[in-house]
Image (tube, rainbow, N blue to C red; front, side, top):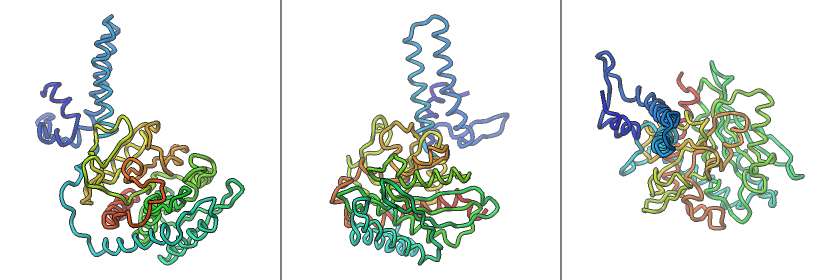
Length: 389
């Protein structure tokens, strides 16, 4: 039997586990690490915490309790919140496929239309917002969709969410939502935030148009993610989620595409909110998958599929919503109704130097990497939606 020290080491990372102790034997049969590591993730923190409580119960001082409980909490946080399945891509990126090259052109076209031709689009510029709605509605219609334009009122004005649907098969009552907001903050043309996410929703709708998923897929473009409507009843995604809840919709997963077009290779180009920094790379060259604790399984599944199918750096976290940045987009609107939802992002203010500024322009984005990311996200959505099942 392995020592406790080795077991603790194994719980700290799949790569280390594979090298040090890749499998265990149960009654003479080999059991892969992929099977028993999740069990170890659960058992170790419980054992360490129980040991700490036993020390206190026996009359020991609080120092032994802290000495055991704090490492137990750290092990749990690492194994449940931070350690993700698979391995992030490292090294040179392969050439774009023919399909990805076409996606690159479409993504750039949409971003330049939204952030270049139209520019700022928000409640204080209703004509620009209407132009954005018309542009996105037309782009989706050209893909062969019947676009549902869903008006709602906030602050005495009328705004619109846009939705297209890929019908499901034998699990059609289960719904996967892919969404992104198309509005901007005042003073910013919003190329990355969130022209990149809006463009990605349109391109993903095109990729999924002829799929036959088991679950129903809805591609949605939201109004009013930015202030003054952020985290309010006038936020487009809150309106959408509330309407879905009233209908009794069974939303099993939601993906919010939020600010996904900027990447930097230099050391020190990536920042993090406390206390995540020590656990992640300092280069801003990856795409992030972010969820709350309830959405941990969706985060881990998404990262696993992305890493198995896509040669692009990736990181994931499932953390308490009070950590800054965890709830910073439309996915949080779905948490309000108990649904699992995650944000896919380049981490926005923690990387992008032009965030929420007049310099957030189309020339700042890396459309080649954006295309790779969107292709990978399409594979994740297809997996969750049950394409081919």
